[in-house]
Amino acid sequence: MAERAPSGKVAVLMGGRSAEREISLRSGRRVLDALRAAGVDAHPFDPAERELDALRREGFGSAFIALHGRFGEDGTVQGALELLRIPYTGSGVLASAMAMDKVRTKQIWFALGLATPAWRLAGPDADPRDIVAALGLPLIVKPVHEGSTLGLTRVEQLEQFASARELAAGFDPVVLAEAFVDGPELTVAILGEGASAQALPVIEIRAPGGNYDYEHKYFSDQTRYLCPAPLAEAQTTAVQALALQAYRALDCAGWGRVDLMLDAAGVPWLLEVNTSPGMTDHSLVPMAAQAVGIDYQELVLRILEAAALKIDGGPA
Image (tube, rainbow, N blue to C red; front, side, top):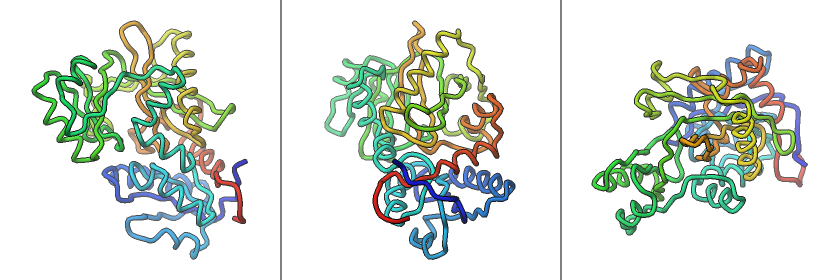
């Protein structure tokens, strides 16, 4: 059983040292403003600028994790907070680490029979011709431990593979090649954990030219978001059910977002789980929550209320 505690003085962890620092700062500031507007004693805390043990010394009762990417979404800060006995939002150490690793995530889903595109590791010794023969073209090349589409390339021709791998390796030494699914891009926000986890309305993402990259994700006003996605009721139910299975398979908690693709036959394919999704003015979890009457302030309060220590044992 997760150990919960009153929020008291709340640290909003933002910034950090990952490649997604800029977006984390934007998420964190918006979360901070919403918590303060609700009367919460919330304070900004950037782990790139301060040691985490200051949280304990300064009497923080819980932490809202608005960090994205490595050193914030990958289990590392979650482990530190467990040692400090400071309840935190979102998934625990193991779930965060697994979700951040796209290969481990795929291996778990594949073992459970959940649909995810075929993949190959694309290390420096891997022959691009073998990968293309296995996965076909186009295909996706991306870093294994990164988010926000950073380092991602859609490879249309074999000759593009080397530069795509080099770009991805600039973000992470472990590179993944993945079969391309040609169809609408979907995402499902989830609140809660276990059997009580709730899937919010499905969102369809329509980026210019089908290129939902870093710029179109966070800064462009040209990307369109259809919420709820224009799917048949049965298809919506199937997508939400698959997203919940994917989320539960990794033992995610608190909140998260599952990204999928829909192929030409209407079959959904799992891409990844985000355990600390964006909370900016362009972010999708607040959009999905708003569609069911949960405004931004209520959303962050719900997430904070579920802050917990996920590892039993020892006093808080």
